[in-house]
Length: 306
Length: 242
Image 1 (cartoon, each protein chain N blue to C red):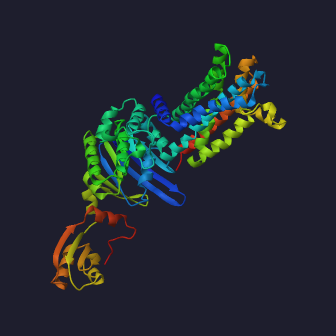
Image 2: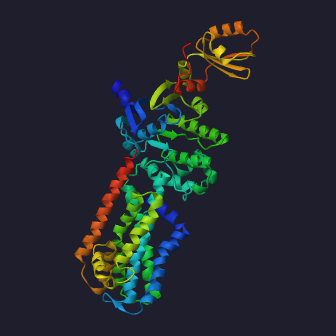
Image 3: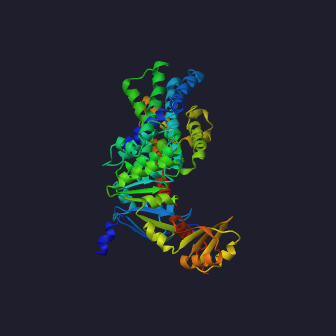
């Protein structure tokens, strides 16, 4: 059973290590992605996201570890036309038009989509005949998306796909992606935008210093960082006093606006009201993905024992 | 591979600088220099025919050194990385680059010969014309690889100057700008190990009835193989890059 499950994985990374000089870019990374999963790789800069993706695609050789895509080597999977990718380090020649780029990519595969289909799906049709060098950042990204899409891949790997896009392009981009993944395709994407991970991914993998620090659904990740946030408006207090309240981990004070990250929000709220009966605008919320992200990827733990 | 070759040709043909400077210049050079050298004879040929073949060889070399270093730009843009994610094998990429250089060398060579025929009134039989076209074209193969080698070996901003630093001395010492007999003795013997010398010499031999010189073929083949081995090595280094 276990063996079958292993070979069936869309992505299977085992014990990956990669060191650049003194820096451990990726440190004993294990990750298994089932076909059809949409996975967001999240993490601060230099967390190892890009290195992980480049190793997964066979563009960078790991120092140690195993990589399998659909049970084959990355190079084999690419040769079989199973993988499409948008890389930060991959690019196109400025003198080529978007259409020529997609056309050339399509021509490399035995079974590619129609060039115009890929162009339409990625929303490139309007400027398909313009030279790549003259396109805006967002248009370039969408051209790259069309080029990644045209081989009709089972696995799509996207490194910060929406990086140079404005809000509207970004929405259109994700709409196109949703359309694409309904067919059960596997997607791995790295992003800095938590909202994108939250809205689009089935699963979020949080990385820091080349390691996975959390892996699960958005809800599961948020739940992992135990605790809630109390917000209130209080006059005449200090962050030190607030942090000393029972159940409070860290306290932030901006003017009269108080934000308490709590390990025990009930105890903290009782103590807060006893101490500051005039506190107003009180809200108690579960942590957002953003809070969880900060908590899990910050170098210093946010949750201090009190 | 065909699509890639076709696209590259299309992109290059949109560049007027490339068409004029690289492909048409050798013809202009020929027309000017054949006036300069006048009506002497060299290497058993009249000067016009001699210079025509030298400049056709120079044209083939110019194209190779203009096309090859572009690989540097592609590496910088990340185009080759993108292609590595496709089924195109590594040797396919190298073959595409060589094919593009070879295809574009042909018009440069033909323009020089055509101006020889139409402007200079050089009279050769159809068989002779065909023989020198083929000889000049096929013998320029080592340069297609050498140009590629330069594009792969150094940063894109150094590729152009390095290309010039290789191809100008090669043209001069190989006797393409002036007959080797004019050069001092040690330079003339140096010419015998250069592919540029043999590219022109073997082609001229097609007209003077000299048999194919095994030394010449050997020198051309050696340069071709050495450059190809280095190109493959550099491609592998790129692929295993951090």
